[in-house]
Amino acid sequence: MSGAFLPALGNNHTSRNHSLSTRNSICYRHPEYNCCFNRNHFKHSYRRRHSRENEVAELLFYRHIAKRRTPQKRTTTTILVFCCVESKSYHIVVIGGGVAAGYAAFSYVRMGGEPKQFAILSEESVPPYERPSLSKGFMDPDIRMEPNELYTCAAIAQLPQDESWYEEHGVDLYLNTRAQQVDISAKKIVCSNGCTFQYENLIIATGSRARKYSPLQVPFSNLDGILYLRNMEDAKIVRSWMDELKGYGKAVVIGGGFLAMEMTSALVMNNIQVTMAHPGDHLLNKLFPEKVAKQYEQVFRDKGVEILNNCFVENFYERNDGFASAVRFQDGRKVSGDVFIVCIGAIPNTELFQGQLQLQNGGIQVNHRLQCVGHSDVYAVGDVASFPLKAYSNRPMRIEHVDHSRKSAASAVLDILHGNPFGNTKHRDDPRLSIFRAAIDTTYDYIPFYYSRVFNLCWNFYGDNSGTPYVWGNVPDKMVTLWIELSNKVFGILLEGCSPFEHRVAHQVAVHRPKVDFIELQKIADVSQVFEYLWNLLPEKVEKICTTKQEES
Ligand SMILES: Cc1cc2nc3c(=O)[nH]c(=O)nc-3n(C[C@H](O)[C@H](O)[C@H](O)COP(=O)(O)OP(=O)(O)OC[C@H]3O[C@@H](n4cnc5c(N)ncnc54)[C@H](O)[C@@H]3O)c2cc1C
Image (cartoon, rainbow, N blue to C red):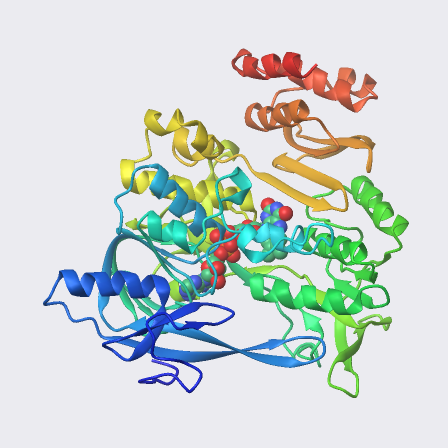
């Protein structure tokens, strides 16, 4: 086990039962074991020890020093981690403590799972949270959400699941607990703090990590002031830089995807001058057609952002205080800044399973029930899963977007608890689970849905961007793009500034992929009329939309 075992903590800690609160966790000193550990683990282990006399739980702990870098100074935060060498056994263990884990726990509780039979192992120090908010409400100077407001399932208006929620609902949440080794055939997990777990069913929800430059390939890319954004700790660091630079600083955002666009927007809202440098010909070139991207680019330019296309980073430059001062691109262009925020994509966390599970698309290959190939008791969900997209000829797909992570998590839990392949009416009729429709009706029949927000805009995409894109309207007012295949079927639809009714039509269009009369469609100039036209093509069973539309008008 890594880290030092300490029989007692240093001078800072008293010997009272609930004595110590650090910035990251509340810790307790155990009277019998003379050691400190996390509040939740204390309660669980203590109770069990006293109810089952023969069971001896050996409790150890170690101290992990996390160095947090801020623009001005480096501070050291001590995180206390509970550790036990006893092996614990659960019906379901989730590895990963992100969005999918939080929604899996929520679904487990809602679907009537037995208490104390579900555990989450998370390397993070906070309960699962809505990761998309890190680049939105958390950075927005007018909103400035705090970490505890982000906990899942805030997005579906459930009370945020803080540590007490997990405790009350009998879900064992192991924070600061990184799965280090997984033996799929033995159904055993060993964690970096020495804990071991046995499971009947495993849900892999390890998500992705930020893709980073290696200093070997990009010299000086490990300097202070070169930041990435993937988790809460990263977000706190980025936010402290924003606070520091507010009003006079200069930031360089590297990347042209949705995260780069969101970070640029957040920096501008914090009154920081930004250059956005990206490798493509236009922003979000994997999704947006050029015409739409140029409209968004204009929105950024109108806010004073400098946008540089076709930029491939060659190296960074160091200031005499060890911070980065500039970035140089392969074509010789050089841009200086106070801080550099790198958003160049993500890498799925599959390493633990290499050689044990089948990989595909950079992720873990699963079937329609999200079960790993050859292992019906091992599921992969969220960013890390490569699953067959049923609605699109079972094309294997890996999706790094939050809607899929929520729904796939619910689907896996439903499958384990009730068997999913033929649907489950009990849960289908539960309105609080309606967001999990894809999970509940059948096997995992997912219609891709992505969204992002910049400034006061919010784009939404449904379906698949195959075929030729046709654009109506303009950003920032109102825009719709349809991707139409050779068969004249609409495969994908992108919206900005549209009404809730139009969103529902868009979703149904992605589900049913209606065939359009191209000549008729081209006569339409107005965005709202495009939706009227599409709505008329939808099959009868979407009558509910009609009712809602009438209500809205
Ligand atoms: C800043 C940001 C903004 C985003 N905005 C949007 C958006 O606007 N719209 C959208 O659709 N999507 C957005 N996304 C993507 C979305 O957040 C992800 O698709 C989603 O979080 C994936 O959920 P997940 O549970 O699969 O993985 P994650 O949420 O990444 O969770 C994985 C968890 O597993 C933990 N972990 C990994 N390995 C181990 C291990 N060995 N042991 C224990 N724990 C481990 C990680 O620390 C992490 O807590 C955004 C992502 C980021 C980073």
